[in-house]
Length: 260
Image (tube, rainbow, N blue to C red; front, top):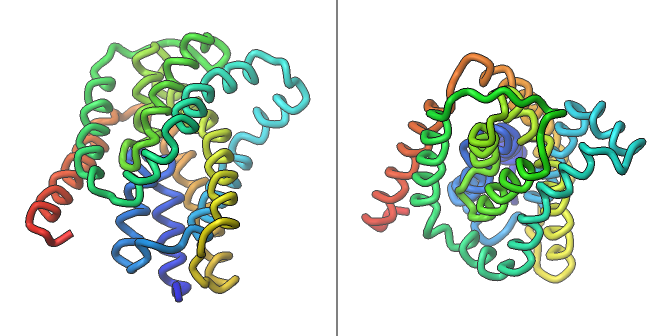
């Protein structure tokens, strides 16, 4: 049975790493491995993602309500176009990515790749585009990077922020759009996980633990969004590259020695 402390910690991991460019799926895999939940906890994962979705709703309520009132606005179409690549890749290769995600054998390499992409993009000359200047081509390119992040330890936020910098979005807008684009991605993930809940076995987890994990993910997710958008005003992605490189190397060494 998952304890309340473990649920709280996993909520912190999900909330922070969903929006910090260091891979939430990769870190959740590590957290579940440490707590002995490698083959369980799907319902908990779903609730944790609901927590981060709540954080997005709070931060982006203005934009989301605008799109509800204006479903045919440019912002709505930009998000739709940015989501299409991930939907196509996810549907075509669902079983493949599910197998990789559960095995965890490639996450060390994926952390290294995440760091390399962020480091490279961070060296691109600072862009100038604001949210209302994002083109449909920009959205598709950023969405294609998001599709690649279906691999468990390729950071969705890291890759989409990097893509935004490459497409000449200013640093703050790159982060802001990355998190807004995560709304349909996270919502889609919740739907897919919910479907699996009715077809497979689930871990017996108390309602209190689920509530604690969800609330923790929502609170720390909100903190991560606000912090990251402001952080990129004056700082670079390189510090996160160093972190995921170090983590990737540690995991590869542990895998090579048979410890992990």
